[in-house]
Length: 109
Length: 123
Image (cartoon, each protein chain N blue to C red):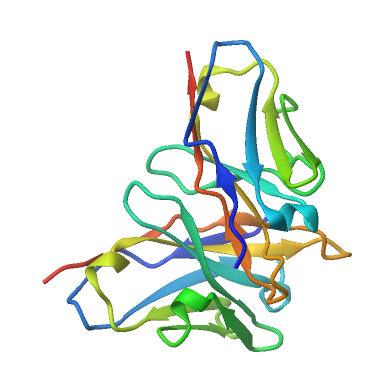
C-alpha cells in the first residue's frame, strides 16, 4: 500500500506563515485532506481536496499540491493553531483504501 | 448536522474481542460511509476499514483483514467495529468518522469524527 510522509515537527513564530508538507506516490493521483488534532481530542477536518475549507475553519488555513507533495499553509499562525496535523489520501494501489501521514507536531513560538 | 457518538472505554484481556459502537444523528445514515481509524498512544492515525450501510458492504485494511469486522444497523443508525484476537499492541483510541468522496473520486475526507473510544488490552 501507499505511504504518506510528514515531517515529525515544525515550529513557527506567532503571526508568521508556516507550511506543513505531506509526500507520497498516491498524491500524484489524489488530493490530500488535512486534519488538526489537539491533545485529548478527536481530529478536526481543516482542508479537503484541492483547497476546500469546511465552515468554521479560519481562512488562514489553505491547501496546495504539486507532484507528489501536498501542503497545508497557515498564514499568520495563532497560538491556538498549535496541534498535530495529519494528511490523508486515497491509496493509489487500486484497492479503495486510505492512507494517513504520520503527523506533524506544530509548535507556535 | 451529523454527529457521531461512540460507546465508552473498554478494558480487555489478550486474546479476547471488543466491539465498539458509533451512533449517528442528523443526516441520512444509510447514505453515509463510516470508517474506523485508530490511534495508539503517542502515535499517528491508522485507517482500519469502512462500511457503506446502504449497500451493507465493508472493506478492510490489509493489516486488519481477518481480525476486524465492521457492520451497521440501519434501524438504529449505528455502526460497529469488532476487533478479535486482541493483543497489547491493539491498545489505542478507536474513532469512527463519516467518510466522503469527491464526485470524480480524486479525494476523500473524514468529517465529522466520533469522540473516540479507548480500548486497553492488558492481562
